[in-house]
Length: 322
Ligand code: COA
Image 1 (cartoon, rainbow, N blue to C red):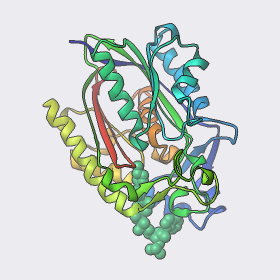
Image 2: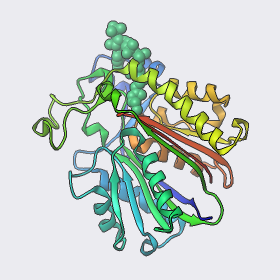
Image 3: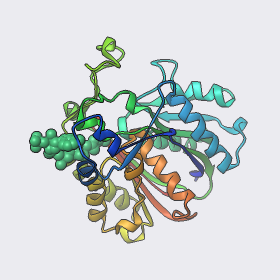
Image 4: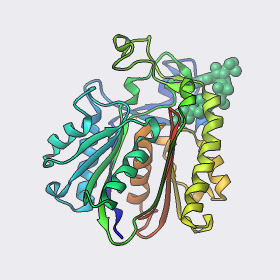
């Protein structure tokens, strides 16, 4: 049996940092409201001329170096993002060219905040099927370019960044289990009202920002993420006490606390970046994973559960040994 295993991780965060105090000057809000309701203290924001592929390239370089692989060995690129540079070509091909990776399948997956989990799951299937041996998988988002900066309900939540992993074939697991899901009936609760075949002329104007029914999203997220975590452990026959780390999507500290509680997991076993990154959508899980690995908390061989939830709704989990 062939498995896939993470051989290296990397992250990139834009230089510019926007604190809650900075936001107090932009919209009618307070540091206290943002911190207590969301856990966010600061977030990184791209420069006007910075793009998703710029961030992917930097995060990927760090993952490639950490995994000690040659770019010539990479035979699959998948990028989870809802904010690609262009409508086409897909951002993975732009990243492929800029990194000098030879011809191979390169595509992006759009599943909102679950984008990285969808991308990693897909790469795992390619490797298990014997169709790839060394994949570059990235979650990246320039979401602050989509935000309406006059809407205090949403603009305080989001940030930009990219997290990358190198996923290699391995005789040892590696990824133990993956679960993806989606339910399109919830579209109205969280969406971006502009796309290639609809209202494109509004993109980037104050007529088009993220539309979100915050408290409704909150309720479904808590319920779904709790179920996703239990399902991942149950189907692998693993007791929650065996779990070393939860690396959740970083949308809101209160959603994360509820998931940890449901798993009976102390918060010391949860990698938290929401305070520093905000909600970076598809980038949030690989960013948190890289933080936990590079600061030495997540050790080789440990059992890690990653999970995410986003617009659609979409959701998913990856259970793995590092
Ligand atoms: N600063 C100050 N007040 C704000 C505010 C801000 N930035 N944003 C909203 N408010 C106000 C609202 O206008 C509302 O005022 P009102 O009662 O006078 O109408 C009040 O705060 C409470 O709003 P509510 O939506 O009930 O707060 P909440 O406790 O649900 O927290 C969220 C709001 C958005 C933080 C929370 O619902 C959330 O995190 N939802 C999930 C979002 C998410 O995860 N999205 C991405 C999914 S991947």
